[in-house]
Amino acid sequence: MSEIRKHYFLEDYCIIAAGRGKRPSDYSSFPEVQNATSCVFCAGKEDMTPPAMAVYKHGKILQDSKNELIRDWQIRCIPNLYPALSPEGAGIPYQSGYGFHEVIIETPQHEKRLTNFTDDEMTLLMTAYRDRVLHYWKQPQIQYVSLFKNWGKQAGASLEHTHSQLIALPLIPPLIKRESDLIHEKSKCPYCDIVHMESSNERSIYENKHFIAFAPYCSKVPFEIWFLPKEHVSHLGAMSEDMLHSLGVAMSYVLSRLETVLGSPSYNYMFFQLLNDDSYHLNIRLQPVTSKMAGFEKNTDIFINTMPPEKAAEYMNEGMSEQETH
Ligand SMILES: [Zn+2]
Ligand SMILES: [Zn+2]
Image 1 (cartoon, helix red, strand yellow):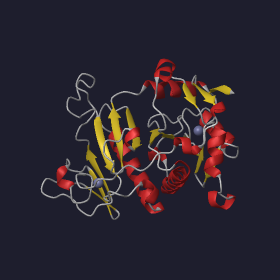
Image 2 (image 1 turned 30 degrees about the vertical axis):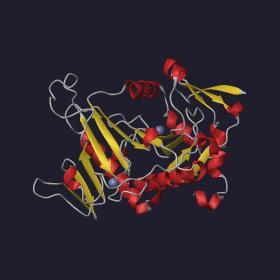
Image 3 (image 1 turned 45 degrees about the vertical axis):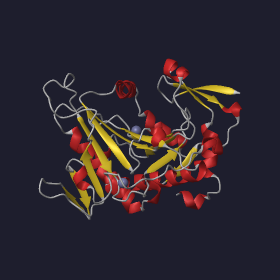
Image 4 (image 1 turned 120 degrees about the vertical axis):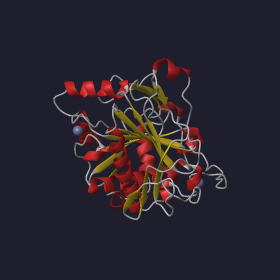
């Protein structure tokens, strides 16, 4: 039996095709072979990339200079060597492909992955996300900063060393624009309602002081998971240190569970946020990559998902007691 589901408040649909009765093992993948020798993101290869714009090192935020590249770093933010957009030609933003494209190297260690990060390391990463997003949002003519992570070849990562990316655009993507327009028409924030609804039901996965994680009702792909702050905040810059910590811990928990349930899936996560619109409610969407977008999806933008979110949450919660998920 299949079901057509509508997004919480947008004109957006998915087809939950549960009848196919798949199990998590049908979606698992295995770690790719790691090859550190030619990796330019590793410690000691700092001279093989453009100089870093921001380097997080033991409580300080530094910058590479021409004559000195900072070593012994924790997180290193560099301009993308093959940028989708670049800062030249700010006067004619569209024609000149104006924008910024940064890579956030999350650790100097090649073999390390987010699921090996300590809570403190995750918090530092969230702090770097916040700082870099704010930095680019303040640049002239920048209207949106896209922050995302591609993990694994299937998810579009061209280098396996764990990293995130940020692309600053001179426009607001239509997807976000449509959403924010709709939110403006409402008397109350729909995401605050979603927090209320998804906090303790069959799709809930995790909750801590400031964040919840759950499988959304209209999940586009198997094991899609959303993170929502319980308080209404529009962007990372509006989050306290304590909230950044909560977010890091929540992401760390969910990614580890995902690895236990799915093996080692490729995934993307994306930050949805708006800096100059207080009515928007920041949200983060994690989508494991278990199949390719095909003709039907490209024709209709409606995804067929063979794993009902209720079932995905059940797998994610299997063997976990109440105490472990607070
Ligand atoms: Zn590396
Ligand atoms: Zn809200």
